[in-house]
Length: 109
Image (cartoon, rainbow, N blue to C red; front, side):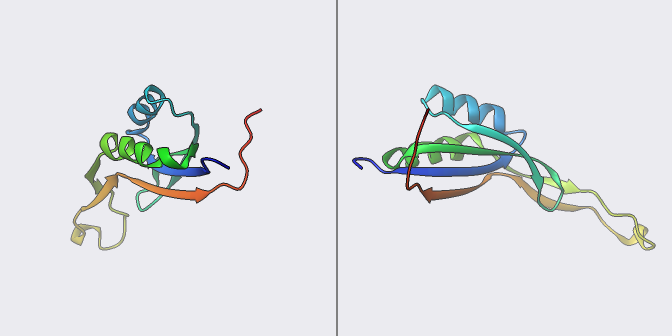
């Protein structure tokens, strides 16, 4: 294989998804978008799955890095008996969690 393929799985904040996907499209990357959730706040995420040539992985990561913003958000307080003693907590949201995997075979039919 001349240029091996990689599978990039990027978990990003829903708020960042439209601009990241638009930038990816403009750069010629094709992706599958999945809705997902998780994390400390149980907020919605978008999981992007993209098959990409190995020498283009850095270009894709740069798009995600530039367009995905990391920021703080106040976490909701879970009601308890001592609710009056609890202060809201700021937690980081945004950014991305990215996995880059080797691909043994890639077929586009």
